[in-house]
Image (cartoon, rainbow, N blue to C red):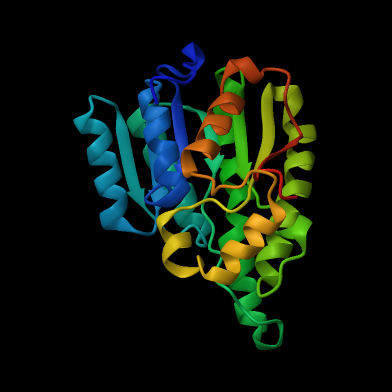
Length: 254
């Protein structure tokens, strides 16, 4: 990480990453920690989340993990409050938590539909709502919503997930308009085929590899840190003029 950019504005800033126990979220936590940020993590995976926080503290970085089910908005609000109490007002929120479990259109029930919306979209809105007053009080902040290129590609076996991620773009633009007068920037990062442990374990089949390489301009698989570096920029004051936009990390696929 030392060979890439450092952002003075992130040093000492409190950063909240949802879904920070694994995958892109854990990578984000490590990158923000390396910038000197105070890192708050919320995740349902308690053991993994504690391990990431302990790793950061072992590196001399401030970190706080709170276990919570983000589908429970009261629990989400309580977790945000606990992180603010521990680390101070949130200057950067990264709405990262999501679940891309495959599902067939014909099998989706109303209950499953509501659960997928809660898992992949609803908590992003309410996390932003929870941190916005504190951001305004300290003079502004940055919210980065993690979307996906799935809705741009029209991929199959992911209808509710795809719809949720399309809505992230609409929400990002709406919140950028709502929160801009308060000095809060809101952007979305849309990853493509990022090789997290989960992706490799569950979805990296020969057909998937063929589809990705057939679509991408870059003929290699992308890594979580390539998302993290873009998120760092958008979180920092270096991106002070950037809001209401989608930024793709997809190797030129979409």
